Image 1: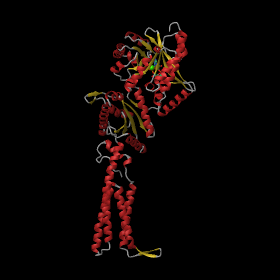
Image 2 (image 1 turned 180 degrees about the vertical axis):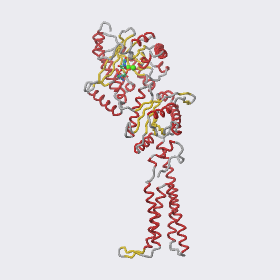
Image 3 (image 1 turned 90 degrees about the vertical axis):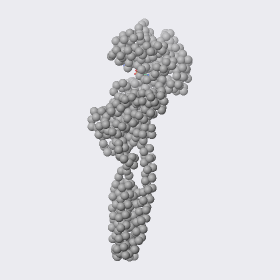
Image 4 (image 1 turned 135 degrees about the horizontal axis):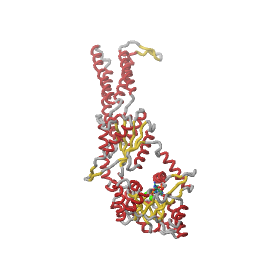
Length: 580
Ligand code: C2E
Ligand code: CA
Ligand code: CA
């Protein structure tokens, strides 16, 4: 039988679901029936033996049946005590009823037959009654304590939502019961920025408010499906959806949760507008176990994040990179590093009148079969696996060495841009390694530019700024990469000692689709100039984009329209050509 040990009144959907989780169920039902039957059998035996004058031979001795009455009676009491101890309130009240009905029978027997031989039975029952009352009182205390512990075990302390453990318990239950469900993971976009700029207190208050909104939707069942929201940790939530029959249904429900964020969130007088990315997987279509389903929902979430401004809800697809895929990629990176299969290509950068400014070094990995692994795939894996510093260092060292050789041959003054991930920048040995490269490559520092994504301004301002200051002191140039994709504020930008701003390809792609998009790029370029930066537009593919960029005053261009990434030998030829 199920013991409603979490919350006594089963009011909301969430509470109902928590109460129904299998780890709440008590002793097996079969035991309850068995104890009751044993009790009835021992009761019949007590009645039969007490009035029997017969006897039976055992080990050569005649044993009178009535001498067994006491043993049967004690056995019956034991059954009653077990019922009261293991079967909660139902067991307790049943055993009370059973024991209390015995008293009139014993008393009537004693008075009707004017025989007080059963006085022992009377006291046995009285003691049993006392025992079950005391045991029950004690059990109630233990159960209350257990309830509190279990509540804590399944509740997220900050938001009061069920937690990650409750989520995996429910998924396990549904998989065992073979019931169709959806597991969706919801992650707030750019929440890290709020924590780092407004403080953790504000971040927590926002999480509490969002949790309350989402729990309200789940509890009232307004989405039309049976939902269960949990907090997985940080700014990550999970949603288990039941009673949904079509993909359309699922999307409708998820849109409800997404829309709940559209109303502004106000904390300490400040308004916040947050959005979420959502990835989901369906049981049994997308996976047969909770672990696989959750991992697949996370892959879909990563895809939703990658889609950025596009669709924020994604379902798992077979061709998405999965955790296994990431492991395979990690293995390939490691072996490439060991076997020197990491190399670089150079993509030319031009000024707006098509004069060569320099090259950006881009990492490449060759698989043993000769095929190339794309940086879009291996860079994020390398960052997670702690291998990015080796990649960045190797590309930096080799590309700088290559340019050094060209300078000795041709005295070229072109710039070499290298990508430095925030993880590498924060590494203790970073500055020492850069100094080592400078000492050996033979390139003047002014011809070297370090590209750092603007996420550095959000993640780790202090230490990053210090390192960047040191790079500047060494004489290197600094470029802010992928500008516009993060949420860095103007005040950060102002204090950032950069020389170059690289406008992300996403803005260039959209630039010619409408006046507003064009104005937006024009505004970024103006701000860049106001702060004294050179501006490079990335991912320029078409002549029409070039024309627009020329009109709005962009300084430099990097894109397929004038040059794709190429092997160093091709870059050398390009440099040797009379007009680059
Ligand atoms: P990124 O730093 O923004 O580099 C520019 C990327 O855009 C390159 O992709 C380049 O090939 C591509 N691209 C340039 N022009 C065009 C264009 O006109 N159209 C299109 N469709 N694409 C264009 P790639 O080489 O695949 O690199 C992808 C990203 O990987 C880079 O983006 C950078 O974030 C990262 N990456 C590459 N090499 C390194 C490295 O050595 N270290 C680190 N930390 N990251 C690297
Ligand atoms: Ca770059
Ligand atoms: Ca870029």
